[in-house]
Structures are given as C-alpha cells and as structure tokens.
Image: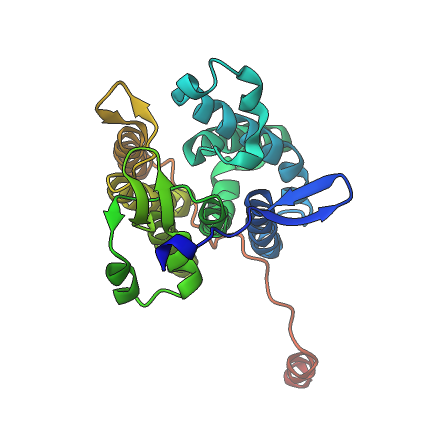
Length: 294
C-alpha cells in the first residue's frame, strides 16, 4: 500500500508562466487572517484604522527577508555550492525566529516614528502573529518538511488524523529512509491555535501593556522548545546544539525578566484596555437619557 502513496502537489495553481505554491499561498493566508484580526482590534485601542496597513507595508517584506537570511545562515552548507538557491523561498526555508526579529524591529521603529507605544502595537499584533504561524505551518506540511522522527502508520491512525495527513507523512527522509514520521508541523500548529485562544482571553484580563506580547513569546517558545526536540530537520549550531531550542530558552528567560523589570520599575503603568474606544450608545439608550434629563 505504502508504495502507491504519492505526496500532495506543492503547486496550488498555475496562471500561465506564474506558478503559485501552497507554501507561499498558506503563509499569505496566515498574514491576511492576522491582518484582519489586528485591524479589527486597532480602533478599539484608540489607534488610527490604517495603522497596521502602514506597518505591514514595511514589516512583511523585512520579516520575510530576515526569516530567509536566518535560515540560510544556519543551513549554509546547503547553499555554499549554489548560492542562487538561497532565493528559492518557494521551496521552503523561512525561519520563524528570523521573521520575528525583523518584524519586531520594524514595529519598534515604526511606533517611534508615529509616536505610538510599541508595546501597544506588539500587544495588538500578538494574537495575529501566532494564528498566522498556525496557518503557515500547513505550508510546511505541503512541502513535507518540519517533521519528527519515524513512527508507524498505526501510531498516526491512533491520533485520529485524516487520511490525507497520514499519507503526506509518508516521507523519504535522506537519513532514515522511506516511512512515516511525526507530524510535528501539526503539533506546533495546534499549540499555536491554543496560544491564540489564550491571548484573546488575556486581552479581557487587562494585563499591563506589553504583557500580552510577552505572554505570546513565552507560550510559543515553551512549545517550540519541546517540539523542536522531536524534529529531524533542525537548524544547528555545531553538531549538538539546536538553534531553535537555544533561542527559545533565551526568549523565555528574557521575557520573564522584562515582565518583572517593567512591573517593579513602574514602566508598565498602563493597562491593555485603558484606551478602549467608548461604545456608542444605542438609539434607545439615548432616548432614555433624554427622558431622565426632563
């Protein structure tokens, strides 16, 4: 049976000479969903409606470039003989940590030039970032990448996964050979969806400004640390250190320190909901107020 399993096509559709790959399409879908969620929240936080439109113009290309540079640096052995392959991003190879570095740096510069708190922007963006990551991981699924160690088909079936997911996990790994592998892309996608729900709930908890974003950093990094330990296609520092795990530890510790420091020094003085736009009264409420005045 396994010999007849063919991987899903990486190509979503073709328009003449233009080929659109699932990898790019799904990442794009994640960006759009995240953008819509952030834009809806922007006005509630007292910011101009086009804030994230203007930010995305700069942040998206910079994040993609930084994500690719990050990936290529830690996989340089794959590109040293053919450097032009470093530009073939449709084949996969965008490191989330690299994208976050570029995106957050852009948001900080953007916020300062607009005279806006960058913590407020990062708080608004946090749920959008993590749900975009959850959707984008399915691009890795289509490319048969971001998978873990060997498993049996029976194991995958025990997870109650759809047949198309199980079949796509039948991969010809260059080291372990042809067989079934852990769908770590799926584990991370589910972890990110749970994180998305958590961050939406934390909005109503009314944490201090910046703490929703720091919660995102901690949540994502904890999950990434453990899931990275299962993956086979790790970016490495030397022969033993997994880059994503080291970065995850640094981010967790850094986020906790910043959280405590901002609380103790009074830098976290405003709450997330402090500048929520007042809800306009309904026609019935307006009439009731007029009657009371009379």
